[in-house]
Length: 161
Image: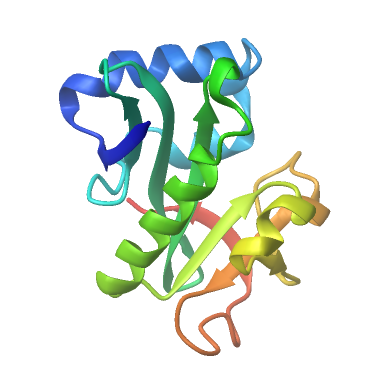
């Protein structure tokens, strides 16, 4: 049985090791990492999943970004240890953190991912919002946490300095 908790500063190295395990060695070369450089994650929304022995099974982070003059949450990276994939940890972390984001007053969330997976959480493809290249625009997905949060929001995704 896993339990969710907020990521703490002492979890950093363990979370980074999980990301290294789950993603390609060049993960930090992706364009989404340019949006995260020298920007603190939204720590109140970052989640980890640990089992009863304290072993890390999953991790999820959020980052503040901007599209035009609007603040946006960038979801990711999210990773689940290969031995625990398929147990619903990612979905539990996503649901828990999205609920917390809404409670904190965030209005919109963006991610780069697979629509068939993320559509169950309400994410949809979005037109007019561009991640830095070489991101495939078909994988740029958005979620409104309040009605019409993405109405009129267009432009390039930029770091929130």
